[in-house]
Length: 166
Picture 1: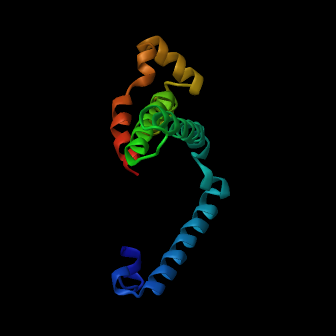
Picture 2 (picture 1 turned 135 degrees about the vertical axis):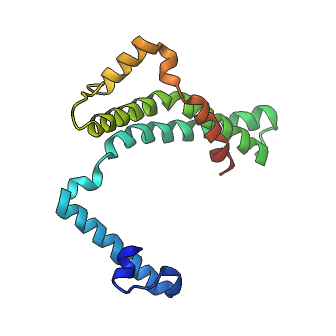
Picture 3 (picture 1 turned 90 degrees about the vertical axis):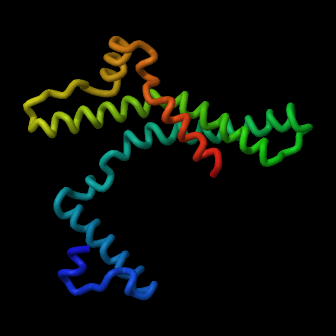
């Protein structure tokens, strides 16, 4: 906003829709090219690997569980007919199964990110706690047992309500 004001560009609300869209695209590409100049093109893909490691299995489990859950619930509880409540139950089941199955992945990803941030904030004076994903899993199991891999699962279950209603 300050950049726009300094260059005499009015606020987005004051622009017509086509001009606002053009300004948005121009600024987006300016940001992309400045990232490329400062950090290189690879910087645009930082963090993609860990996210795909969690998202791909989560989506696969979710679609599989939802489809089969819908079929089973409708066959056993609604004479093979689909209804809104069948979709709702299948979506809730898929969310719970997906959250339970992938929670360890998200827990490890989060701990590794926090570990890296803590080491960077300390200016390198603090060494990282985990060497890699497997080390994080090993240390979590040793210190907290299998329950440790499922920390935060209750918050994931709360999120199921949102995804169920979509």
